[in-house]
Image (cartoon, rainbow, N blue to C red; front, side, top):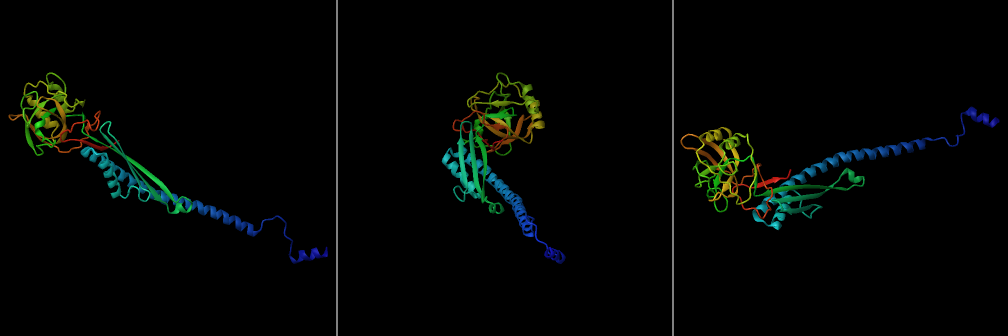
Length: 321
């Protein structure tokens, strides 16, 4: 008893069994700090590595887009699938993604059931920095692009003109790519290589009112034509006021125009740039053919890639929507 009183007087006490000490508290703080540090590293890693991966994805998408367009154009010209695949991979490599190197894969697929549909997939490995410390050393980034190309058989918002196949060379190149006066020979079909005829893509007599509505944009022709379809209409009269309306409503624009052979049979679409029109004494339209044009008004609707004839001056080449 006396001993216990002396211990109390001296301020010394025996510790209570089971009470937490300072070492335990320090251990808990260290665990919490470590967990917070890992969480902060994770957030920082997602921000930095995620942003870097997004930038890589944009670069891959650009590579895929360009590769698909290049391959589709190559196949349009050559008809060689192996050559087109090589073209796609060459373009992808020039943009930093070499097939089979450093985890990059460039896959190319071709569908010719309706025009040319070239799909390019670019897959690449993104090497992580901060997230790699947490056990994710890399991410796979994949992008795809599809390009469409072909010689068109369908047109929307077309011109009311038909031109002669003789206005083109045997390889389909337009002879008139500088401003030229094209006259109306008052025939059902063009009478020469610098002649044209009116059409509303119907049958029988050409309906001048409908032609004028086409010129003004009040009537939109949405037309698919097969090679060899007859589209020369009975075309009596010079329709003087149509020239004035062409000058008012069509000048300065590119227009899809139908091309016919000597019998008035459809041979394809070309793109014609209207400069002006004279409804006075000359009765002419001044303009020129646009070579190798990719018109948004032209499309491939039902023509297999290797079955379409080589149309004149115009082809379709675009990324799929």
